Image 1 (cartoon, rainbow, N blue to C red):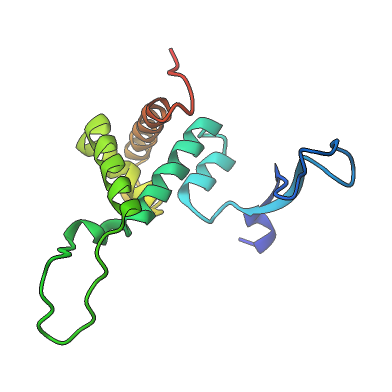
Image 2: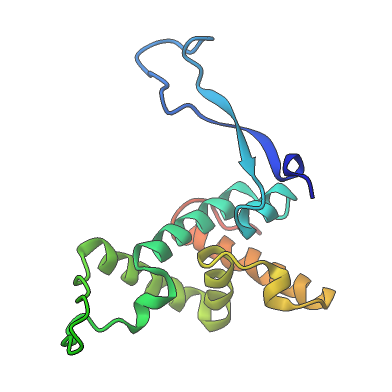
Length: 165
């Protein structure tokens, strides 16, 4: 695949937009940007139209929480262990990491084991549905449906969207 096929032009909020001045050509609200759709599985699914804006926002928030605690390796860290081999001691958890861990625990209770594992693999670790579900189309479709439902639940939990009917 060519590098041009991986990039997609999108409009993003202008970080330099001044609210004190009217929006015009010199002070635009949004600016064009190129997004690599292969950056993560979430951006790929969103670029294909399989995820809506609330689901993408929920996945991004989950990813931020996941990265705050250090990904999958944070669950096995014992901050109170004694370093015997002369290696570098780990820093204790900070307040941000503890809060992220509590929020992820809420997510796990809400989503259940399967939903949480799928969201953590896709949004947290960046695995594609092909890597998770394999080559069988039905398994990928079921995984995509479970991912969308889980992200909808997270969007409602974080008030990013209202529940659909």
